[in-house]
Length: 173
Image (spheres, rainbow, N blue to C red):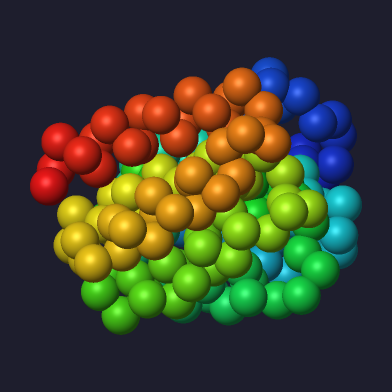
């Protein structure tokens, strides 16, 4: 498969599924996809983000060698929402190595508190933060405060995620 050509062919759920199936659990194929996700032109990166997140959801170990690159990508100014959305989506499903937990926590708090950030990015970031709170219970009050400050102005999707997370955080204390 000429991966870049397949990514550019069409942006659909079916095409995403075909790329995810092609990658499977192959580290080599995932590395090829991830390299495109990190380094190609804007539109190709945007389209590669979706299959990257689904590959990691299916095979979490595939991201293990790429945390540094992923965190650096998320720290770049002006990255596409698709990159943020799919990166935070995949971060919900993995064990983040200890050395990257602090930077990921900062990124997610920035996303959640940014008024202009897309709802899905905020919702996925909340879940990542809730997962990190299991290791860092001291961030629970900050997560609650961020949710309380925003919940009224947010969409039903955000409100639903926030309610679920508040319930989880309360049960975990």
